[in-house]
Amino acid sequence: MSSNSQVQNQEPTEEPTKETNQEEKEAQGEEKDAAKEEVKAEEKEKEDKNEEPKEQKNEKKKKKEKKDEKKKDENKGSCKDFIYNPRTGEFLGRTASSWGLILLFYLIFYGFLAGMFSLTMWVMLQTLDENVPQHQDRLPSPGLVIRPHAIEIFYNRTNPSKYEQYIGELHDLLQHYNDSIQDGNDLCLVGEYTEQDKEPVKKVCQFKRSILRQCSGLPDTSFGYAEGQPCIIIKMNRIIGLKPKGDPYINCTAKRNTPLPMLYFPPEGRLDKMFFPYYGKKAHSEYVQPLVAVKLLLTKEDLDVEQTVECKVEGSDLRNSDDRDKYLGRVTFRVKVSQ
Image (cartoon, rainbow, N blue to C red; front, side):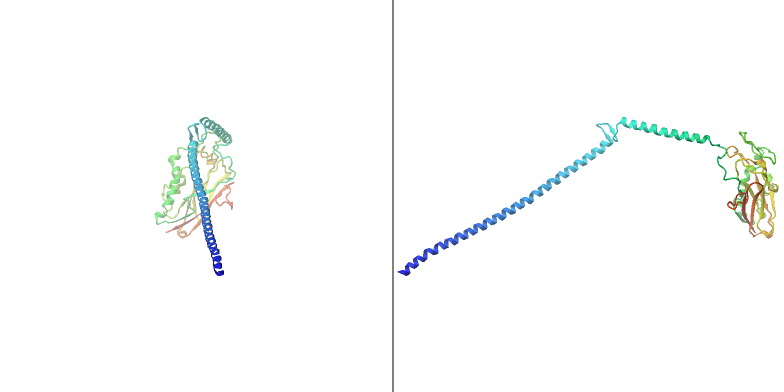
């Protein structure tokens, strides 16, 4: 009996434990389901949160694009309005009356400046003499130049092509001195200055080409170059108002041990005072400059030998020995005639 009662007592205790286990399992399952649902809900919330800023960003981009388009349209409109605004009638930001006032101001302003400049120029020109330079202190004495225009005159007398250029220069220089042209000029007093300060029209003294005789190119068209005794023409630079004292003449010497024979035309290489003073290119436009021709009488022994010749203006107060200016009152050239 006792054993049966024990069995009976044990059976009811096993049933409630089974039920409690099932309940616990069910509760755990429910908790798991709830946790899953919570995780899903959190994920959805995150997704929703991520989606919202994307939408906001897209909206902001769209708004910016619209603003940029509006600005572009406004800029286009503002440029067109700046050139010409049909509402206000402005051109380049100003009305017609404003432009008119500005143009009137600048017209008066620049007109005043032009008037002041013209007045100052007129006053300055009243102090100048159109015939005489105001300042000519730097040219107290004239320089000398030669024709042919060459420091070295080297040629072969048997070959005319070598000295044709020299002959051409001399003929061109003396064209203005032809006797037919000089006959129209005045006969002046020899040895006297031709002063004509008060005369409006300055007379011109004659200097005929024929005075140069053997170096005139008339009896010998080669000026002595063909025979090996060339002619060199010397002239003095013009200086307005120059009146050399004394009796100026040209003197040439060869830099060698023995003198070199020479002929001068006019005789003694004189520069007559009747050709002075000179009154300027405008007042004395037909002025004839005096010339001196030097014929070098080279011998056979002088052929193929270089000759250095120096010519100076002497017999007056004109300077001819300034070391700083080798052409002041003098000129040096070299001649070599070959055969």
